[in-house]
Length: 115
Length: 114
Image (tube, rainbow over all chains, first blue to last red; front, side):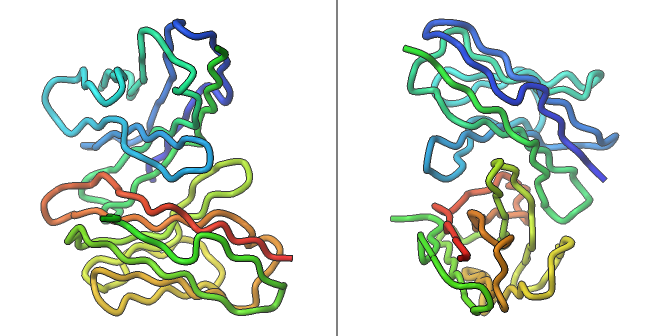
């Protein structure tokens, strides 16, 4: 069964600092990878996704993520965070040809950006 | 134009009661899901339906029963509610036949059992 591990449970940064959130998954086959964001009191929204092609994907709000197949990783980055980026971030993996579309989510990383 | 809508948004009820949460999507997706998010924000899948057919049923007490009258609706009925059922329940949808595996989430239903 696939699993997803997010290394940082809670990250605190000052505005303009750079961000990198780690995500590793365990599944040997073809995967779709996602990062979702959940702002306080809101539902999950898709930040970016990787299906195939260029392993460096760009998402909304200046976020990007790099898929490194050899490391089973899909880390999220942003060069300069803003206070409005304060939210919960979830990495998710969908193992193709199994689990009928079920996305397995990591436990989430709480990002707090101090003004 | 809400893509995935859930009702109610908040639900407070006593232990032992039976309650339902409704979900509808207007995206034309073929697959719908129920996820449970606990107080620590952990997100776990409960059920998935593809074209009204149950395809994923995780380890969930049989007090929870999903019902999909058509592929645009997936309702969740919970019998004999317990304190531990308190959580936020998210409905989501995706379109597997086109390979669109990203999930679109509803606003969530915050269930509080007292």
